[in-house]
Amino acid sequence: MRVLLVSEGKHELEGALETIVERLRNGDELEFVRERVAGGTVRRVHTKGRRYFKRMISWLKHAAEHRFEALIFVIDEDGDESRTAQARDAQEEQRWNVPRAFGVAIRKFDAWMLADEQALTATLGFTVERQRNPEIIPDPKQVCASLLDQSRNTLRQREMYAVVAQETNLTLLEERCPRGFRPFAERVRAMQLEGAA
Image (cartoon, rainbow, N blue to C red; front, side, top):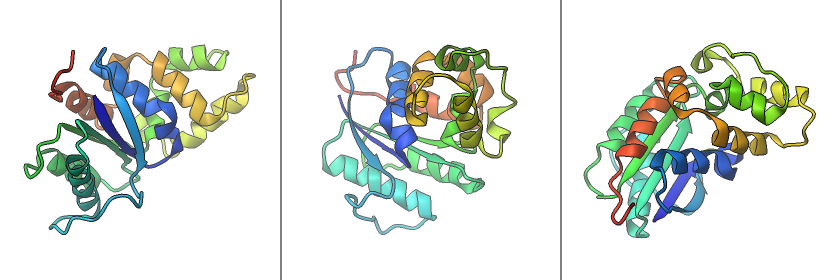
């Protein structure tokens, strides 16, 4: 299945988000094409709605026009609580019949990397204590960077995320990130892909 994977940056797009989606789809053979939200390859759709809703709809139309079999789109909330409603509205958009999963990470995608201390421990090579509620940490990217600095391994932060995404208990991630990850995970699992196993 050819899947358009759209997100904001390298930490998501260099393995971590892809790994999470593959695990949520539990064995579907997925071929990803990665793009940044602000990528120049998509033409804006003129429609009513807020800024990110318009971007989501533009990517949905792009996915339909380029015959992608699904669209995965994840952005950070970044303190703008309206983004969750915009993602919900885009999820329900009926103009293009492309299976899709729109997600908004609360507050940032990096928070998803902090949900499972056992995955962090296995990745970083030292005992990592349970982090406080990931969705309320003001700067989860900095917390991840600090943990990586304490490690003796030579991973870059985006590589750390890819490994943590493989190791993380997804049920625990849903429990600890209920506002952002849980609805996204439900949407990914619910996508009806033609020919999927």
